[in-house]
Amino acid sequence: MLPSTLKPISCNKLLRVGAKQDGGYVISKKILDNTDTILTFGLCDEFSFEKEFSEIKKDVSIYAFDHTVNKFFWFKHFFKWFWWAIRYRKSFGRAFTFFKYKNFFNKKNISHLEKKIVPNRDIDHVSTSINQIIKKYQINPKKTLLKIDIDMDEYKILNEILEEEFMGLIIEFSYVDKMMKEVIDFVKRNKEMSIIHTHGNNFDQPHKDGNPIHLEITFINNNHLEIEEQVLSDKDYPLEGLDYPNNVMKKDIQIKFLEN
Image (cartoon, rainbow, N blue to C red; front, side, top):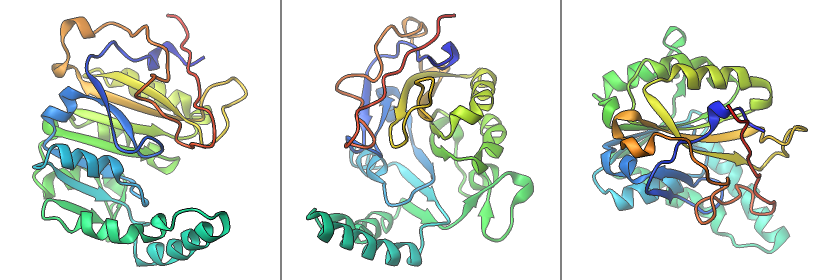
């Protein structure tokens, strides 16, 4: 069972944005309605969330940061996915994701920047920080949704996330079997926000205790909650009709929470 600290509250009007597999996330309509800017840290080749969000809210600005997605990335993965399609007799669509990527990120209010996100103290010519991005692009955190994959290296920037008053957060915490203390500490210190959704990424098998090794957690600023929403949810997770397995070849991971 997961610690009760990670249990979502009973938020109304949840919806899914993005693919019904890896890349889609559950947010609330309040987040959709109040977002002017999306900051995405960690892109790879999956941007269905950003694409669908921008189709619903056409004036949203999107800044995606991923230093690993470059010309070499697309060259290598084109041949990888092309061979995969031939071998398993699948669609060749993924091999041509590059053209979808170019079409999407060439729009005037949507950008991909080949920069690594690091703490302020570690900035160099190939990296940047949350604070530097907000200043450079004149972003208002109170109208901003931050979407980020926290791998082992990115745990170092959790403190800097807390320094900004974001409207919403979508965080995939990786390797929580090793980093649960850091995750719990972040949630407890993030007093201005509440968890509205928790989902386990099933690409890796659950830990021996049954908990997911990777957790996708959605937060919302408490200023956007109604009084009746500020109670713990009694729903079963994953949520039917909203949650789907990241890896469609495996069953989704059932989540249970410890009682207070």
